[in-house]
Image (cartoon, rainbow, N blue to C red; front, top):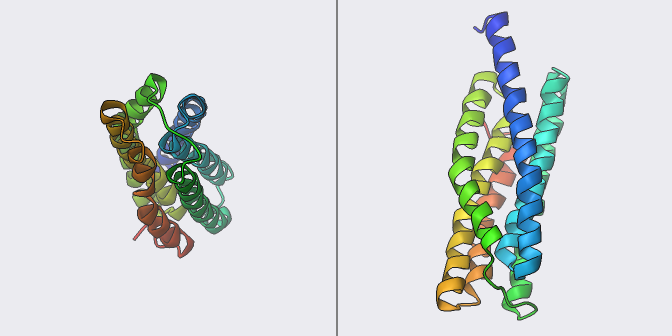
Length: 199
């Protein structure tokens, strides 16, 4: 059983991590989408889209804990699940358009730098959120932690695709890499919608 002081400390930590997520996602989404526009990269568009969705998710979870109301828990979890489905559709559409030849992705150093930073930082952020979600039993926070983890996975996959395109000019590697994350995103979206993310 948590004491009132422990509960207050956890609430403070949750808010701190959510504000950190919001700040980083604003920078990450803007930088990734600018880089995607310059490079015409589906992987970077997918990554930037993921960052924008994670930003919305972080705001939803912050509001849930800001109100200190458990009534907001299930709607927040459902919205986070819907955002995961939106991400899957977004990644699929951009990648298929690129594979069909509507754009030829190019390397971009700004995009690579953002991906490297996300690959390094997102797993840590996801782990901290998972620990807090386990302590509080929050499904919405667990789903938000999943989005942070997906951001890290997607950054690694995008780096592989962009790297293959940069080094060996394999144009299809960029959109193909973006497609690899979709099954995981869909699974986590289903879990969030069923409120199973904490299990």
